[in-house]
Amino acid sequence: MRFRFMLASALAAISVAALPAMAASPQPQGHYHLYTAHNTPVPLAAGQTMEYFGGQVISNVNVVAVMWGPNVPSATVQGIGGFFQALVNSTYVDQLAQYSTVGITGVNGDPGTNQTIGRGTFGGTVTITPVNTSTHLSDTAIRKELVGQIRAGKLPRPSANMLYMIYFPQNIVITLGGGRSCLSFGAYHEAVLGKPNKNNVFYGVMPDCGGGFTSTTNVTSHEFAESVSDPIPTPGSNPAFPQAWNTSNGYEIGDLCEAYSGTLTDSTTNTSYTVQEVFQNTTGACGTGNFTSP
Image 1 (cartoon, rainbow, N blue to C red):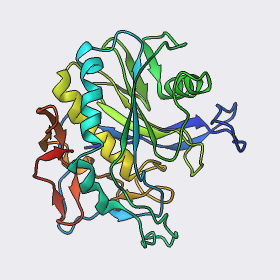
Image 2: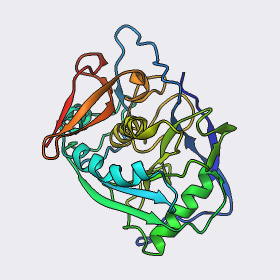
Image 3: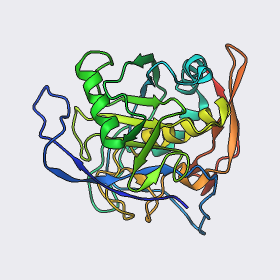
Image 4: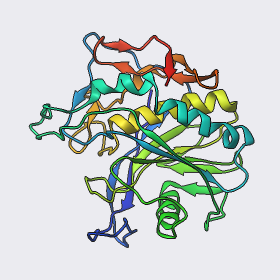
């Protein structure tokens, strides 16, 4: 079962050209969409579907892989670039086109964003030198560091298509809502601002739980697919705008299929990667196929 937590976090006012800032007065931002770390699939109800709640999706994702300092496992540092180059230009992304929003109105009457999901790009791997050197990090600390690194010019500036996927050394513990990385959850994705804004920062948090690179690509694909199809979570278990695609009780396309995996094969390098299947609205079930790139 997926864990859900409310986060009391800061949202600051944004000027036309400004990045998100951490305000002094906390406000509820939203709940996290967590990879549970237990590979426990959510039972599929008869007639299960993803519903559209009117929010934005990521049309042509531009992924930047962010290494949290120099001690991220070498397999991740060396392999994640090739994985993302294959992933963003693959049939794995093609399947997400069913979650485009062209001509669709949200179930609660929101007008929708009229977007098409297509293949994306890989913006490279960047190893940052975190200002925060603690081995125990909250999500608030991670977001503050991410925004600070962007402001300092160490990371590319955000855009509607930018997705920062952050990888950590094995000794770093991440906590949120009373949960602890690799015990309560294996990964999650979020937005710095819990509302639509052109300067929003979309990101995924991938702790290293010791499962090796196969586990890393599997979990990464889960968070990648959910970030593309639902980049801005909202409070509680009752999805609403500005969320995009969820079940009526708040599950995303990866949550329903955690126990199912496939293979992504890069035909250019003849390299294969493990990826997680996601829920298919077109069939009402988890995917069962393998994927190719390009």
